Length: 266
Image (cartoon, rainbow, N blue to C red; front, top):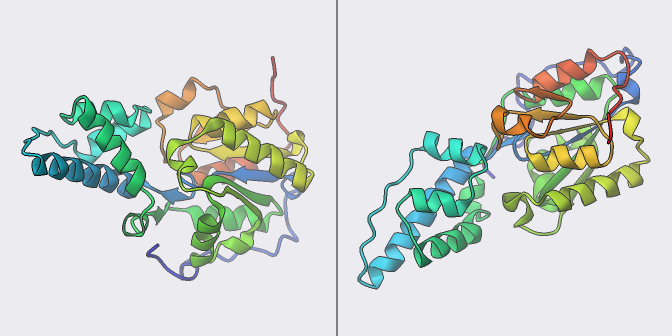
């Protein structure tokens, strides 16, 4: 991934935690990676464009001319945030039948290639947010559907890995793109057991239904962020504890809490 190999020069200096807020010092924040921390929008749109071009070229080699309508990045991202599947996106781009299947296969094949991964960027305010939480004694745990080694390397490249007490990821390259909710729940349950975290002292921050559902299944209050893969409108139906725009807003909200929030379970 292209990016700074160290923390930004404007990275804020916070205290060593000696002035940590009483509640914050006992808090554990489980945070997703893609969306809250990493902006994947450029990679996903470039993957869409390349997948469309490769599908068109493949059919052209067979003497078949496809009449495509390439979506703008804004159109594409609105569809992703509304959780429209790649099949629907393909059809709205002019593909049909087996052409759709070829496109979906190609997207899945290339989305994690190095020439596309380098398009990922750190979300604005992330370094401030993580440093602020860490300085106040909050235990940060990354729970991601990305390959664990990949997520760790990216955080190290940005000088952020040392802020996390644990990085929990997967061993494959497909879970993140397909956003498997059940896998996220299993990862969260495993790391809660490993870190001896009680639901009453924890929060789950993420940008998709997988994060919200995982937190709710384990009775953890959830914060949904709208800077990632889902829109506010889409996220509202899952009834997270709170919805904020980005990780820094979530950090400010958490540090303003004076007592744990009880999660209503049915």
